[in-house]
Image (tube, rainbow, N blue to C red; front, side, top):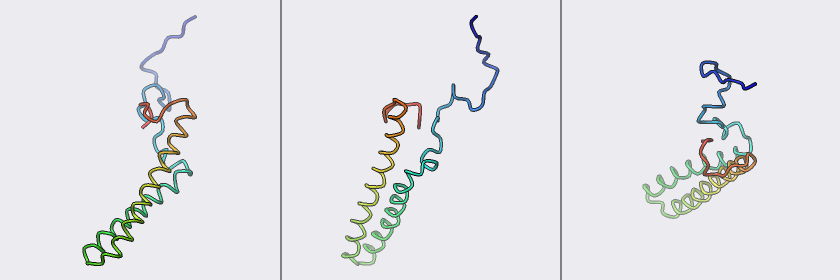
Length: 100
């Protein structure tokens, strides 16, 4: 006997029509936290770089700029690596639609 899918019956969560099966994944997954922290530190050092450069402290601007670049790049790489790990665990690739 075939089952009939009634479009007016709603299930929770709506896994058939949802666009974001991993909504909030970056916050819920604690392995993303170091990457998010490094991105935040990178943004703070971006402000420090701009402040030092605007004030004429070229040496401090270079140092803060290097720290900013390292923090932002490593933070983004950590978040992308963890997102890729989750996608591969589901048999999907990072560029497959359906998640984020």
